[in-house]
Length: 405
Ligand SMILES: Cc1cc2nc3c(=O)[nH]c(=O)nc-3n(C[C@H](O)[C@H](O)[C@H](O)COP(=O)(O)OP(=O)(O)OC[C@H]3O[C@@H](n4cnc5c(N)ncnc54)[C@H](O)[C@@H]3O)c2cc1C
Image 1 (cartoon, protein in one colour):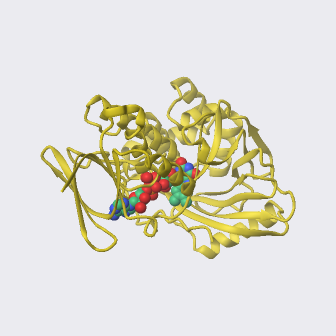
Image 2 (cartoon, protein in one colour):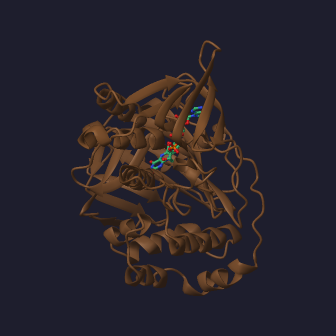
Image 3 (cartoon, protein in one colour):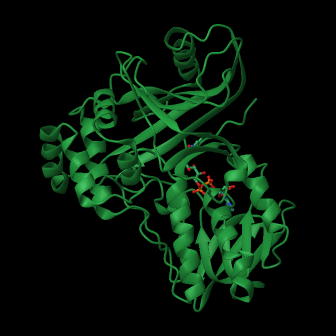
């Protein structure tokens, strides 16, 4: 059985980010030895587009496909709320470019070993843990490590008071004429027909005047059939955006759970969960990538300091409560989703909202955000939360990603 200091299970956003930090050459001989175990691209979730915000000069900038300095929200009546997120920039990272960049870093790092295997079991042992899996040829693989960080998707979501899904399908479009403003990303465009339950919006990420990723997204209880997303995208691109003739060069589809359930970060004395499986997804938005980076940085610091590297809570408790209130208010229909988000963006400077979503806001900023929402239904929902039981979530169709065609 091979021995390493750290075994990371899953080479997605969380596994790759953690491996990159732990094996940073700046650590010199203090860097732990790391095994990164993943079944490989043929069984992985497929390419995805990750967006997040951070100040200029981020670690993965050279892999970013686009960066925006203006962000927009469009109300149902077409009113545009636009702002500068400075000091943040909104960045788009394709997962395949991210993997390529980190792969090039890893090539010069002898402390990192990549193991191609589907992990079948992680065993917590006295003084460490063992990871067992099956290699592509069918052979058994086992390795022993001091710590294991497991990012495999959970078989089921945790029990929750509210479980919604952020589900979406996007088209990579090439328009026949200049149709986009490449300087601005549209986070939410509420000119889509609103569903009976939850909310829907368009999401537009243009990187040239003619090319963009255009998505139709819903926050609701169940995903749509593919033909329903296609119809919604045809309506949004044709009737709402008025794109005229265009071609679809790729598609992307996904389901991200929005839940107030709690995700255990510890699965044993030496086994921890990271990434989406460790609760990194922000319940109110589905954004995960930044929390994954914060988690990786904290684990790196704990490992180097010789502490037990329990991943920190990805989101502060009070933010979790605020998100739980919002999810419940949306699910019960007590607040109307499109109007709620439009008002939130209209009444708060963008950097304040972005800091809040990254867990970096202070109580005063949060009070201002709270008072910019419909206060009575939110307080009613807050008062109700302690009385609600957490129940098992309905099974979802998983976090599917459809590779570009
Ligand atoms: C289409 C899509 C778009 C998204 N866009 C955004 C976005 O714009 N911004 C944002 O912040 N978040 C976004 N998210 C949410 C989130 O950031 C991503 O899902 C992100 O990939 C989560 O990282 P992760 O490492 O937890 O999971 P993943 O990246 O899914 O990684 C899990 C890894 O586990 C591996 N694995 C699975 N089974 C095994 C096994 N048995 N043994 C070993 N390894 C295994 C898989 O191969 C995979 O590499 C998006 C999600 C989807 C689905």
